[in-house]
Structure formats: structure tokens, C-alpha cells
Length: 317
Image (cartoon, rainbow, N blue to C red; front, top):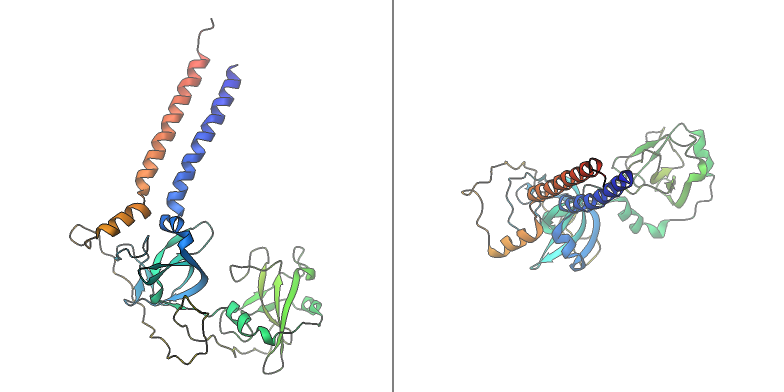
């Protein structure tokens, strides 16, 4: 009877403790303002360069909050990923969100970012020039490695791929989606290997996506970077990026490292009532939450131990 009671008590403990850890995980890994206003944001889902007016940007918990340098920031030129944008009184703010388990970092003004050209922009721009590849992709097995470019002639990082032919990556895992001829009549193919790899580069298991020059897969002739990325441009919520427009290029502000200053009553900017209310809603006290959860868990453990000890040494009737 006592053994069964112990098992029931342990099961109840697990059920009680799990929700507590879940609540605390939300406090740490979530952005409260984003969660509450998700239906009022627009999807962005692309990478940008930081181009802050002060040489850096500091993210905040909610659009419109005052910014200070007490928490450091992002230097100009750094690449960030923006998942969504929110219109705060006519100014758009973007949520820096790397995805995965790290959770959102915070909000920054979109007019202090510049759109970064990516392989997806190349695919959209050149789609009408693609054709179906009819060559033999198995020729790649003859090479010890080959290069994956972000686009033909890209000036960005390219990756040497040497997983092919290994036991877990066969030639049937290489799927050709497009082919393209460059100005020198070299044949390029866009491939997805093991379904592709959305995070860029190569996965540890060999998943990847990119362009291969089938005329020179291992770049033995030192293939040049003949197709550099266009300059970064300002973001617009109303239209797709115009990489070859006639507008003058934006000012690129040099990076500057923010000086970390302690936040004291004398140095803290005066807050408006609206900002205070928004901070209370979107920036919960993580330390307080941790203390409360820890006390609850400790109390449950003590109570359970007391109950088990009482049952064990209870005198039989």
C-alpha cells in the first residue's frame, strides 16, 4: 500500500512541477509584447544590416520604449534577422528573432536597418532565366569535394561539400531545382541536398542548399566572384526591395561600440506613464518569477517528504 501511495505522490509532484517550469520558460524565452500583438504585426522574415544613427542599436522589450546603453547593443554592420514588424505611431519597429531556442532578442526601429541581399533575392530576380537541367548529376561523385555558392559568382562565403558518397548522403539525396548559364556559358545548378538547410551553410548531417558550377565543381580554375551582391537598401513595408533602382544609396554609418553605463536614479531617463505601463506588461520580473517558482517547488518537496515519512512510520490500527 505504501509503495503504491509513493508512486501516486511522485506522479502528482511531476504534474505540479512541470507547469511551474513552463511558466518560467515563457518568462525567459518569450517576448510578451510580440505574443499579445501578433495579429497586429506584419511578417518580414529576412536579414538586415544594423545601421543605427549612433553607430549601434540597442533592442528594447516593446516598440517605443526609451533606449539606453546599459545593456550593450548591436554595432553597425552586424547582420540580424527580423521576423516581424509593428507599426508604433507611424514608425515601424522590427523584432530581432534568431529562431530556435534562443527566443526573440527585442525590438529595434526599422528605419535604422538596411535590407541585406540574399540567395532568395537572386532566385526571385532571375527566375525567368532558369531552365530544366538535363545533365548527369552523378558526375559530382568523381570529385572529392565541390563548392556550394550562395548564387552564381557570389561574393559571399561559399562552402566546400565533401559528404557526398558517404554512407548517409547518396547521390539520390541531391535534387536539382534550377539551372542557369552565366555570361561565360558556364552551367550552374541550384541543388537541395537532404532536403536543404534553411539556416544557411551546412548542417552537421550533410543537409545543404546552394549553387554548383557544373562546368567546374571544385573550382580548380579559381572561379572568380563575378557577381557581387547589390548595396544594402532601406526597407519598405509596402513593396519588395528594388535592388537596381535609381534612388541614391543610403548613408552607411560607421560602427561604434556603446559605452556601458550603470543605470542609476540620476542617469535613468524620465519615463512617461505610457512607457511605464508598457514595460510592466511586456517586461516581467524574471528574478521574482524564479524565486516564486523555487519556493513553490521547495514547499511541495517538503510536504511530499513529510507525507511519505508519515505513511511509512504510521502505526497500524
